[in-house]
Every structure is written in structure tokens, then in C-alpha cells.
Amino acid sequence: MLILTVDGRQARVEAGTSVAAALRIAGDGTTRRSVTGTVRAPLCGMGICQECRVDVDGRRVLACQTTCSAGMRITTDATG
Image 1 (cartoon, rainbow, N blue to C red):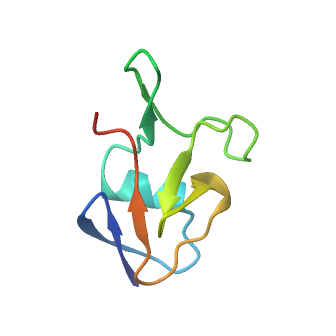
Image 2: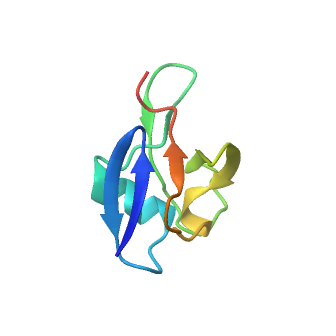
């Protein structure tokens, strides 16, 4: 099991888990808010739609294309 932080909360995930899946395990799976305030979440699962953008250890990445690692700090823009 890996321990990581999602928006300040600890989460445990299996090795090999994508950041998108970790967001779902740790909460509701949302990644950001649109310019109108609508919550957004991963859609395509292959990096095309860009809906899964999050910050991992201070760097912007696509959650569906990034594998979790121990101690990772994930920050979303979904909390408004």
C-alpha cells in the first residue's frame, strides 16, 4: 500500500494505481471547477479531454496518465 495526500487528507492506494483512481478512492473523484463553477472529473481516461488536470508535488499533470507513488501530494482545484 502507498500512502499519499489528496487535498490535505491522507489516502492509501495499491501500487500501480493512477492518480485519477486515487482521487475516486479518496473522495468524489473531482479534479477541478470550470470557469462557471461546475465540478469536473476525468472523462476519457486516456489524456485527450484534459479534464483530469491536477497538481502533483507542485507540477501540473494529467491524473489519468500519472501513476501514484509513496508520499505524493495531490492538489485539485475542485474545492472551490
